[in-house]
Length: 355
Image (cartoon, rainbow, N blue to C red; front, top):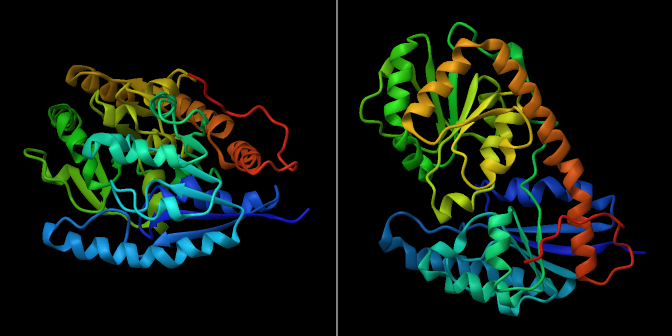
C-alpha cells in the first residue's frame, strides 16, 4: 500500500500551536502510512495590531493561500489547523475533501462564532483539544474526536542542574494576549515576592508585561525564542498558569501547564477547564482560585523542596503517559486514515467523543 498523503494548512511560521498540533506528528506519522505536507501561511493567520494594515494583511493572506488550495487536488486528505484567515471562512470550501478541522481554542467566541459553525459544517471530522471544545463542536458536526495537545518529551525533560537554587524562579510562558490572566493574580505575586526576597518572577513572552507594582529586582523578562523555549522552562522552579472562568479559558488545552510538567516542575494553576482535568491525574500541582489560594500555594511550594520534587516527578510521569507525541500519534493516524476509508487504519481505542 502507498502512503496516504495529507496536506496540512497551518498558521504563520511563528504560530506556536502549529508545532504541537501538526509538526510534532509529521515524522512519526510516516511510520504509520501517512505523509504530511505542511503549508503555513507566510502572512500569518492573525491580523496585525494596527487596524489600517489589516485589509492589506487579509489580501496578502488570501493571495498567499490560493496556490496551496490548488495543491490539495494532489492529496488524499486536507487538514485545517484552525481557519485559514482569522475569524473568516475563505478558501476552505474550495479545498479538496475529505476535510479535517483541528481546534485547540474556543475560536467561536470571536465575531459571534458564525465562521466557526460554518467551518465545522464544511468538514468531515473535527479534532478537538479537550472535552469542552468537543461539546461545542459536536453541535455543528456529528463526527468529533478529542486529541490533547502533544508534548515532545524528548525535548522537554527535567534538567535539575540548570535550576538556580539560590534564586528560585516562579515562571510563566506565553503570548502577550495572556497577560490579562497574570494581572489578575498580581496582588498574590507582589505579596509572595515580598515574603520571599530571594524569589525571581520570570515572564517569557513576545513582549514584556506591564505590572503596576512589582519589585524590579525580582522581575525578569525573557524574550521568547523557539530554540530556547525548553531551557527557559527547565531553569524555572515552579510553573504557573492563571486563568479566569470564561469560555475562552475553558477552551484552552493546558499546553503551558503540560510543558512545565514535562520539564519536572510542580505547577500552580487555575482549576478551570482542562487544567482541572489534568490536576486530577495525580499529585502534580496545586489548584488556586483566589488571591489567598495563590499566595498559600506558592508559599507552600517555596518552603517545601521535597514536595516540589515529588510533584515534579509525578507531573513528568503524567505527561509521558497521557500527552506525549508517542502516545498520541496512533490516535491521530487512526482518525485520519479512517476519514479516507483506508484499510491501513490501526486498530486502537480512539480518543473519541459522543454527545
